[in-house]
Amino acid sequence: QKQHRKKPRTLTKEEAIRYRVLFEGVRSGAMVPAVSRSFSILFEDYLPIRIAGRKIYGFLGKVMEEVQEERLGEVMRARDVTGWDWSVREYLSIDSREVEMEVQNVIEYARFVWDTIVDKALLLEHSLEFDANHVQYQEVGIISFSQMKELSIDQLIIDAFLVDSSEKLESIVKDIAMEEKLNSETPEDGSYLEITFLSFVSLMQRCSMDMPDYQERVTRFLERVVSDEQHRNNSGLSN
Image (cartoon, rainbow, N blue to C red):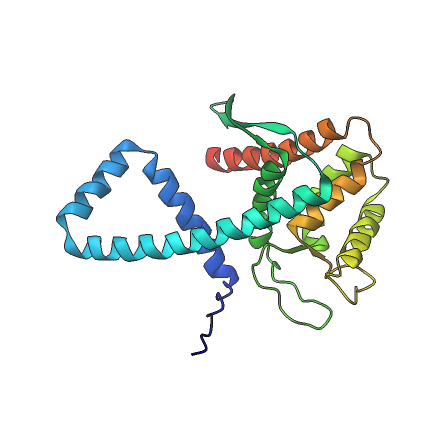
């Protein structure tokens, strides 16, 4: 008997944002002992909460497994393409102090940074772009070059790797996209040019490959993206 495997449903922009916020909220709540104890009491004493909690846990667990498998594949591909294998120390700014969190591989850290960029792109006013055939993008970890410029990531790359201009950077992105066959027909203005995580890593490698201190430059660029986002978050909380 022939079995048909059900294809995973692509999340809409609004669903993707909700799930990301939900995961962040669950993680943050679990790290607060008082919150964790309160939910434990509710879970034990109220049957409806137990039923709903188990359903939510099962669903989120399935989503997490799918995402982790996909992320692992992307990290392995990026590592094969670049050959990069050095460690990066991740820091978190707490009360104006830099607290060391963990040491991880540069490709894994780059994937974390890419998630930060994609999350920011989702919140842009025109975050759902159209490709050359006017097919709407779904939230699948892809951003356009125009979104990258709107987030000022292009300027961070220019500063880190001494790229001549944003136009030169766009040309490099187009070359990478065409090589990976992400776009069979790329518009002249590049406004619909797709950038994936693998494209992002390839872009860093292409811009830094002739620099003797490329490891330091790549690391500083990734840290700059994270620190700028933390600074914006802290500024938003203080206002």
